[in-house]
Length: 234
Image (cartoon, rainbow, N blue to C red):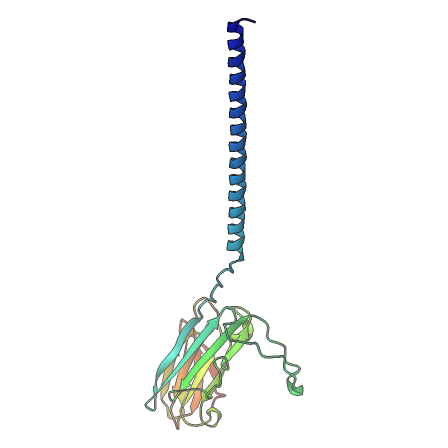
């Protein structure tokens, strides 16, 4: 074999070794890259897992819708009537248990998950001196519960509202827009019907001073047509 042939063989061997080295280096680099990618995926998955484990912030209950039915002074002390509607049971409210007293067992269990509260203040104090914030509230079935849209009554803190300063409050029929109360001494008092926004709950309220008594309650529509003449509150 000539010297020239030997040199060619040595050169070819060197090139082959270099190629193998380059291929091995590329394989090692590729392996490191794959390991780094897998590690990144594991870190991302762990991070996502940690984020998922964090509890979502609780959504606050919607604020109640309110309407001031009436307010003023009576015998030098403040009075007011406010209707409040809670679309869902507010925090701290627990529905009462089903009645167990024999005379109440026939009464149907209230349906719904909303509350309608009637906040009445007479002589500067809540009516009946309630022992809790929900005593004046009724469970209603949404914003238009027909079982709680019409009623009327006398309210006061003395002798079950038969004496002293009192209020006459009514939740009238839908067509009623205002009412006039005639007292036995011939005087009159007028009140407009106020509605809680977005609901069918509406009312009017008229103060009654000590010594006054009702002769009649007349309710009118928007065209001033008499819809109801009531004398049962004498």
